[in-house]
Image (cartoon, rainbow, N blue to C red):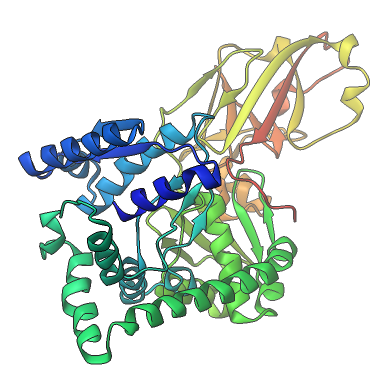
Length: 437
């Protein structure tokens, strides 16, 4: 309410257009209903547009196996994002203040966060702004009393069920009693210092990231170990954080223990060792590289492939086939590319499908006469273990016709008699690709 009052006081001078968004979390029954009615009334009196949504936080938390706090935040920000997608809105101003900042910094330190967590709440993060971080809760209460601003108190703020409340009651409150109210601002200043240090480290990490990281053919990220280890440890961690943000999105982060395990794998691990990090990302030592990739999504055993359209295989790669006349491709046939192959269409038994390899699968590699198990083919081609079950394989009714990126089956090769050609292409899908190495 203090933030709302301040924005209303400066909106003419700053040429601001204000609206209010209110979320009812479905947690506090009549008390939450009264909160909504109160905010709606204030907006009506002030001539400010009011946007409202009621959500089922307990139901969402149960279905998604998340805490009540996390579920509430996700549903709030879904609503906020929908509003921000309207071109009429530019910023989302939230009322977090200095005490909230101190609680966040302490909470993240207890969780084991590094500098990214220690910086706490950012004053500005894209369209989200926090204009009240300069003021303590005590100062805001004084301001509200001076301005005769009505407000409501959320009774759940005192419930020990929530971790943030325990931080407030058991850690921050005793610190205030022992060292005075100024301790709140001092913790906030530490967060600012952490943010400044992190800005410098991430700036230094950009060339290190581009120098050491590259995309593999099926969406995996390859990290050259020895160049990475030549940088300061803080830069090494920043590179790793960037990799996880590539794979999992901009909110991804690593704990101190996860950093330690990955860097130990880089420094001392033998080839073939792997870790699972953040529940879904594998880190594998492969020679002088670390390889990072997500778990493959569960899918049907095979996916039908029809000529013309790109087919998404596993969220990491896609494949397309086209039937063409040989005369149309005479020049293309002379230029090989590992992810483009040409086959004799008349030697293929439709329908086509794509899947990954399984035990006992075999084919006749181009140029050979006898069948070879795919496992033996992968070993002979020195294809690392981590990659073998990620390589798409194009099949016809008689068996594999293309081990994508590696070899076609000898029975579908182009000969002098070939008239109709099946052109096959594969490409990776990079959802967050920014790597230039």
